[in-house]
Image: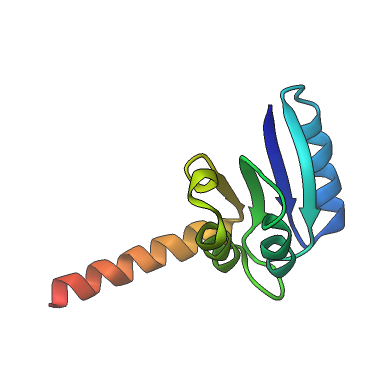
Length: 108
């Protein structure tokens, strides 16, 4: 049974996503958070396999929340833990960061 946690600041989207994920018998929704800060706080007390997280949220965005969660997770949990980011902005951010890193490397 996969244990899943949902993080999104839009309550309607969270509810819709919960409904979709709960339709799979082997998946269990273990909790929800409305922003990255709440997600980091709740992850310390829940053993999970997957977190589905929005990228663009108030308080703490999905990227920073993911980093904090992975940094704070015990090693045994982090080995089989996955964070999935939901947003086109996440792809753009990674692409832009990759370009910047490549440009810096070619300048040096």
